[in-house]
Length: 334
Ligand SMILES: [Zn+2]
Image: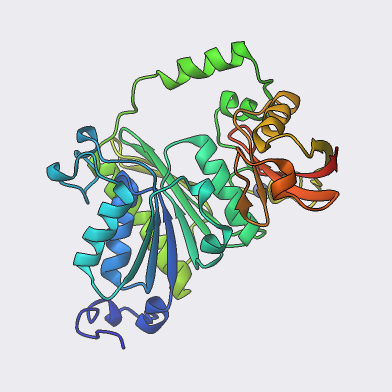
């Protein structure tokens, strides 16, 4: 039963259906600056269920913009703290949280979503969640910020351009997918990781978070016009630009023409999963591959003979250097 008084003002909006909203599930990946605000809006508005995914912990440098957190939360889990605060805000909402990397969360969790919202601050992370949204065919609202600049994008898999169709991604980030694994590359990466943190201010995270939450509500309620489909906002000049991105048939994630070759690879009964992962990393230029079979990750310490039973097994390889998982057929031999 929906609390009509609590939601009475928004129900005055033509087309607003609180019952529909209260039956919806949103998966929110990343509860930093933008995610804090998106979560607050959706929970206040009365969605049915919010699933929060974030493996990060709260630092004092987060508190200028990550509005769900307090000084006393420093050192604690973001996902758990966000879940607790949001539950206080609206106890009627079903809130679940995963304090782990999104890659480690079962596909079934993403399948539960009516909308997936990505508030991640890295390109590899955005590429991964994009490929997951395309895989489970769920609308994805994604966004980011840099100082007084921000962007938001709405992706309806197989209908609108996905994150990879028109890569608004720096070339060096895209190049990661095909850069060979090696010492030079490792050194380069370490240098990138040492870069100073990005400038960030709360005004931008609330504006972009507000737009993203609004797009999610519109998708759930089927009202208004969906963002078509990339918005760029410049807060210093109050300028908003909207780009209409076009789907690419050759997109490696959602394109019709792109057919990823199935790779065959030998695995030995007496080797460990880690041995196999290392050989895959060296062969395909991967960073730290992980193997998944039927939505379950294989444990690195396990022996192949203990976790794979058939002569041929199809496994998926997931890695930071891959835009989407690659499928390999393991030929298991002595
Ligand atoms: Zn695409």
